[in-house]
Image (tube, rainbow, N blue to C red; front, top):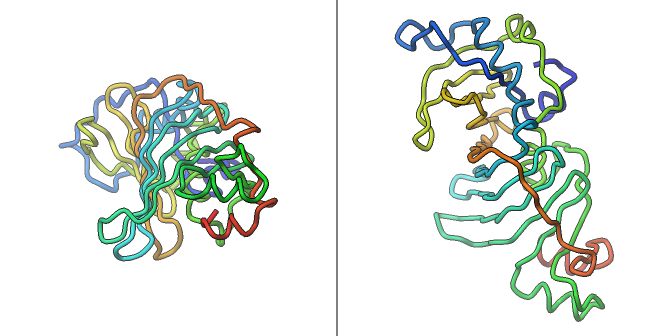
Length: 253
């Protein structure tokens, strides 16, 4: 995918077309083979197709230690970069933290944490149930939740890529895989990233990316593509984390 794409710079890229794979049965291909012109057409439209569809439900997971897992389950409006999710942290398969998130391209709201509303009321924000902080450009030191949210926001493009860029790059056909009962074709991109594309409607079903060399792998699975109309918390429901730094620190926001 062209180097100008934000997704490629941050967490990987791909693209999609209404062109389905044809003439290349999986039994005739081997994993690691260069992609065909038909494959390139699919990849060139993949992120643009997300934009055209409008949004999707998602499940995003990333292990951050040997026995700890962060899971975000929610929906995203790809056109606005806005979304909502329940974020659950498990350790040894036991839930240790659950919170509700809302986000857009500028900020992240966190709420539904026991004691947060009461703490904000005692600190001069009696109507607030969410703390909002900025969502800055990703860096190697960014909080894990920021990395996941910005990866989701980057799975879209207002225009398609040129198919020729995929034919000239290190992109490879990896094989067929059923994901949540959906038949998909998997392609390998740069730097260990992969995408799985629905064989029926050519939508992006799954995106996988290592977050850093030798680090954990982020997996984002999409479903039910279509328009999303998401309402973010109101000003009355929101307090700025910068105005309540002690509370933000206590609740890990």
